[in-house]
Image (cartoon, rainbow, N blue to C red):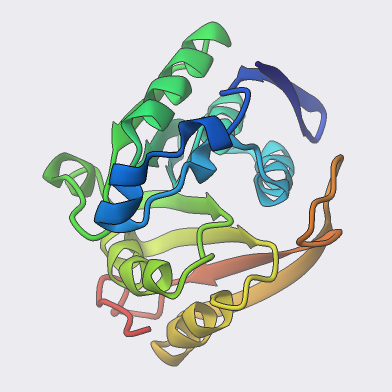
Length: 219
């Protein structure tokens, strides 16, 4: 199905599966409790798109974690970035590639398991900007991101995570702060459809601690 995604003064018309429930796979869930969250454009994703649409990203490198169908990476590319969309679902990556091509955007897309990221992706670090939307919905995600994000960052990098006030986000934020990362939070309204997470999304911004940007964070 087609969906129009608002992003500041931009509008993305993207394709996504008509139903996430139709993509449920019992074998995948039994193996790693995987659920096809990637098939939805979540409220936090729309907030992230709006934030990126308001930035001048000309010449900057951007990686989106848990990109789903790649809306954040596509907005970053529209604002001038060299953008990489990543997700651990191959089907999500294929949708990202298709949507980017359909919009005439040069967006790379790769399958990335946060616990075992490809060497080729790590070799592209440091990224100027690391972004994600609603990626802290489980405690294990924060643990994995506490190792991965420092590996993707340099001393001048920035991390932006849009989160709909998930309970497990607090431990991640506190772990980053405890490791010396500079943190700021904005509370932003959700554009368009509001789901059970409510009308407000926390936008977390992080800057690396001096000389410790690549050290893993214990969550």
